[in-house]
Length: 248
Image (cartoon, rainbow, N blue to C red; front, side):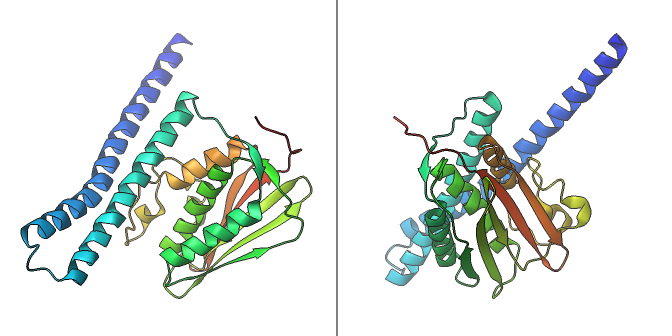
């Protein structure tokens, strides 16, 4: 028995080291790209300020701004995962209008991805529920960003929401590449990225879906995916309808 326990600890230790090495390599790669963008364009503006036209400067500044946003997102994801693992993560549950959150998320995604058609189909009975509105929005943003990232220009992304018994069911459907059947159970794993099996690499730490799963489960809900290669994917998540409580 002691021998088996020792073997198990060795395997767990090796797996932990592998994950740490994977994290270091992935984070280093993902941070290097936006940092190089910021450094490159900032240096260009400094060195060639008088030669650059106003439109060129604005274009470079927009690239810097976009790269800075990407850095912020990466750091936020890492911090959230750290808080979850340390047991320090807490939801701020308040009365939340999910339909409004969906409409705002869809509108902002459409602005960020004008090459796609992003719309919402909301069923009736979406009364306010008790949830952390910031985290619900984070879940939606992660799913919408993935939908846009893995689908071709000109395709449609649809967010649907309906009430089913004592929970809300929200889905995000794309017309993208789809996920192989043997991959669907892995997409919610930390640091797993579907592009590991695809030629095009859209980047990212592979934490978005893992974080979304943790946030959904923290609310007492479930998350899943239905997909077919070449026919797109639909990610579903549920939020329990709790009795609205007053929060101090």
